[in-house]
Image (cartoon, rainbow over all chains, first blue to last red; front, side, top):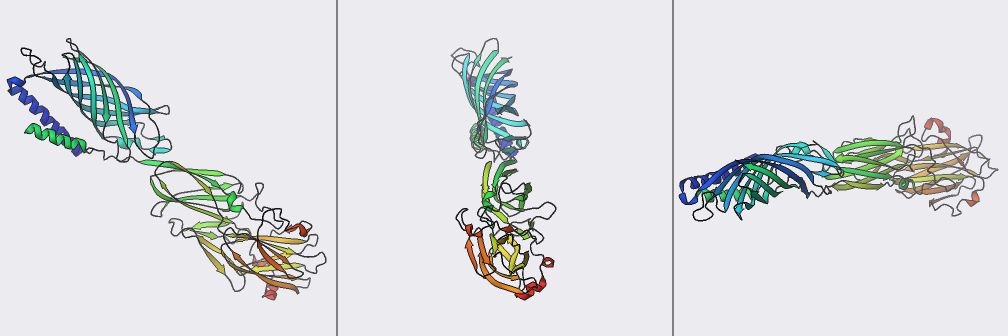
Length: 210
Length: 315
């Protein structure tokens, strides 16, 4: 994805988020609460390899993610329930996420700045399931180059690239503010026009909502 | 409305997203080369394999890769012990279509190799020039393979020869009066154009190459081995006595074709000559030769060593 397209997408989603915020602020029947929090956790990351000329099976590697969370919780669960207890919430996050894969004893690291925007459905007041897109920017790559099954790849060419994908998961929010979550994120775009690699990450996180 | 616009635009942009990054990727091309196929069927005067694993003729093997436009993308060379040493080359290339050219010839230590590549920057102009200072059987093998490199791959090259190896056996009796044998050919190799596989031949109204051989009656014969790119060749021979008088002379023609090696047997006493393709070893062709024939190791086409008087007598 090029920078221009990424920027337009970010603006559209910002308009969407702000419009929801504005509606919430102006309409008594659609009130919401906003909470701010932190989260961090384990990434079990790999890639799906669709590159025809590079035949190999990447393995999962363990790494981490950490960042900030904003939660817009809408509506009332029941008549008489306080605002922000309804069944839907919108949760944008800004995370530093270390991803990549492992192969032949070597670790390949992709460091992303990621912006997931999750739509949460509260099954109960504590338990939720979520789904939504994420938008990531590749800050760094290591190693810079590698030979994988005879193919010499200049991995540093991937730097400053963008990834777009979908995440799906579940979470548990305690009244005290402690949160737990599990999410699977799958990149939908190839990492390069001539390299059909897509990110695939299982994230297990712990957080705190203030 | 704002919400609908934002959602619709977002979805459209979302599903149309793809990366415009391009990663520099090179695939590995490994070529294994077998040169034994090049010298199969090349036989000496006793119908034995002329080149064996015990041969001490160093071989220069050159490996070139040309890209889709015909420009030289990669080149390297190795010196092998002989034609029986197997080797391989490995290089990284960006995905695309390539032509792999491998060629081999003898490169005697201290001398220039028998063939040299000229105008090699482009496949269209690549030619292999015969070196007239080389040894007298400048064999040449050339392999040209087109491939599409879309993943790392291995190429097995079994190199064919692009010319004809011919052995001229001169037989004589113990009581022959001949002291010298002179033979010359009207054509010789000039260069081989790799792209279209054509040969350029040097032709002379006098001689393109010549040999002057001593007759040694300790043996029943002598032979010389030569190599020429495809052409029609005429060879003239003559035997001389101690006073440089011509005893017997003759001519034979040879249709030289790539890989179709020939043995020519000439009896300098009777003047009879026969031309035939080389045969499998042990077929009895040379049983009548008797004592071991004597191999001549003179340098090819050195006019200073060939009696001009004798050449003039044969024309």
